[in-house]
Length: 349
Image 1 (cartoon, rainbow, N blue to C red):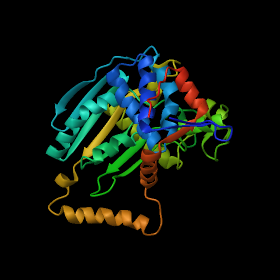
Image 2: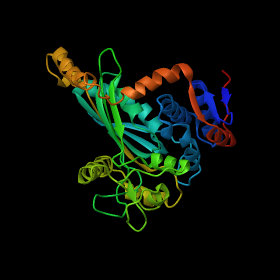
Image 3: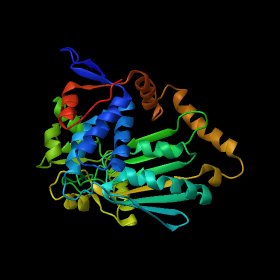
Image 4: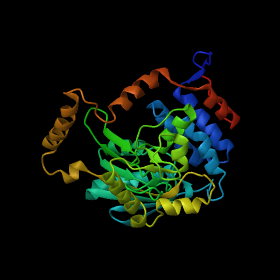
């Protein structure tokens, strides 16, 4: 660890091993079982590594609140079943989704490569994390995939003023030969709730179109939007996409919608509890007899971005990753002190 907490920077530099050690120590101190803590800490570390601080160490205080909530199962052991040749089901038993994903992933890969497409339904899971680490991991197995979840009912539909939908993220991963996978991950709200919370902490105003206050009046004040309702991106198109995610990752797999998740929370302020849907596709199985041509066609699309100087989604993350794997990451001293107060311990470089 390098203490850069001068008046000018007020920051602390950590290598990635120290980030993970901090996360693990806080989670274990809060009472989370070691099997659950490992995947959660790794995802937090991956997000810090890739420059996505809103899903990194900043999430630890919320993780502790979730672990302390009445509905959470600190020692949950996922139950994995195989209802069919193309379906894997993982019952997280009210633990975090990440251990269930890790335990079910080998079966998802096996089934997708055997029959061309496979579905993983994770049920009864608490979810706080980004989805891109999951679809990237699947892409590195040579599979394309989509992942989606509901959340809590924080988002009003287009034309409305009352929350009905969740932030409802969706991620996609595509394998590429000899280079990093193509990956995107975004909320269907106009802005991620964590980014709005970060703007509030920083005393910053929001761009137009992010949400409304408690009276339904459009607002740029993050505190007012957090107390009122967020909005979907792209008007009715974002609302339709968000509704699709509610249905596919909720009732389709026998789990809660964002409204049901919020009711289940009952004011605990824990992470959303719901389901997650992941669909994996095998391009080799589905693509016919000429995989080289299929790959070339895909790469032509990506080249169409980069040849004209446009940013390819995930490109920036990979560049940030390369830097941070060497240099480590910098976090605010205030956040670092808060993590230490939660029981965090850093590894010695």
